[in-house]
Amino acid sequence: MANEVFDLVVRGKAKLVAAAVQEALDGGADPNELLASMISAMDEVGEKFKNNEIFVPEMLVSARAMKKGVEVLKPHLASGAAGALGKVIIGTVAGDLHDIGKNLVAMMIESAGFEVNDLGVDVPKEKFVEALEAAPDTKIVCCSALLTTTMPAMRETVETLNAHPLRSQFKIMVGGAPITQEFANEIGADAYTEDAASCAQKAKELVG
Image (cartoon, rainbow, N blue to C red):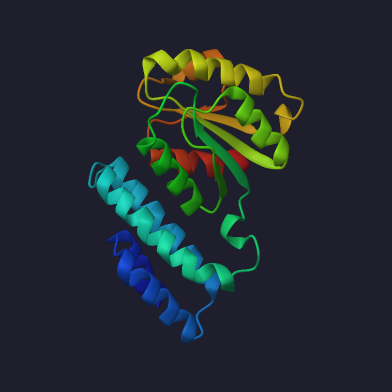
């Protein structure tokens, strides 16, 4: 059954995934095994994306399918199992209203096993700090900017986070169309990734 769920997630069959997960549970399947097979399905989707075998729409469809499966699984998982890798705060920086890339990253990170607090778009640096203080056990803060004009806002956000007393306990990840590894290094971020699939992989490495 886990193989069928894996296959449906890879193929992005959202409507069928929920039923297949329920059927597997009714048949006595281990919820953690089903979750693991969905996570590895998203790993495969991420690999296909990196190799240009599929594109953003297909990746979104698979992430949505995974979400449907996790909704059915959640009541059967040990509390926190779905977010077992830790908490992540994500948002698009102040002045930037783009959310497609950020939403995709949030979905991929959640699919990898993190609990995600999505702050939305046009997020002032103070809001990132408030979210961090409300959840001091946060492992990663992700900042996204899709416009060159909002890169200074990302710089300010990262500078503010770098000065925070909890700084040694969390990592900062940045991304978005105009962002480069050089810029990430310059502003003091811990990691930069160029796409959502790499972001989920990198997030796992950072907390590993």
